[in-house]
Image: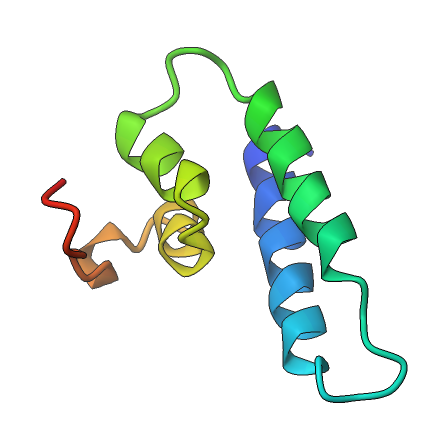
Length: 81
């Protein structure tokens, strides 16, 4: 699997864990954030700046859309990028 494919999986796992945040015992979201950060650090230096921006700002829904090739669905935020 590529780093990008692993990122897609990690973001989806985070989404699933976050959906279960009201369940006891609460899921450990920090492990998911750490995994995404690790994978982000493995991306090549020529990775698209837009994707890197989403990952740095923890905009994981946008990063997921980008990684899935659904850039047209990404709504622009207020950071003027």
